Length: 183
Image 1: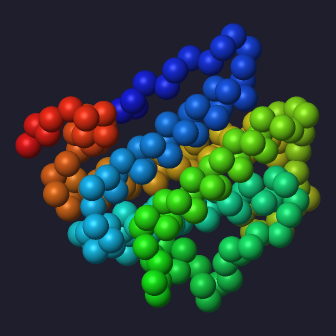
Image 2: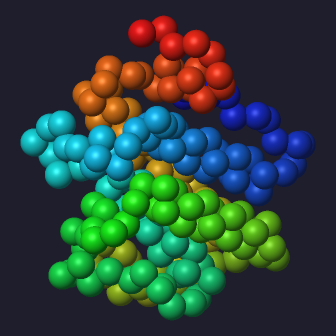
């Protein structure tokens, strides 16, 4: 863990879950700190992953899970044909716009989780080969899954960023906090 996640108030499980999701979002957001759209779109390895693509994918994935939990249609639902576009900026999309979109999704996720009657409340999973038949998950599971999903991609982002310019997660935390660069 590159940053410390503050302890929740005694018994504030929602606050703890929200804080851990926010900490993982911060790790991914820091990976693009100070980069241009062109730099953030670079793919420094054989992988198709870029930093801007990871940000877009995670923002859209969070929205998808939020809409499932809310039982609302996902306005950015991907098809098999458009799945690859969730990992790259297309047409006139910019990193700044994608980060702003993610901010809105994050705010909505936090409001929703704070407002559900119980973290034990469940919502159905869609039919898919990777989900159990007639599966359902709790709001607690949703938040833990967001920690997992965002952390996985934040780790990818750490490697990509270090490959681009040598900056590590620790250096990016210091930069974000206003400490002088060590490089």
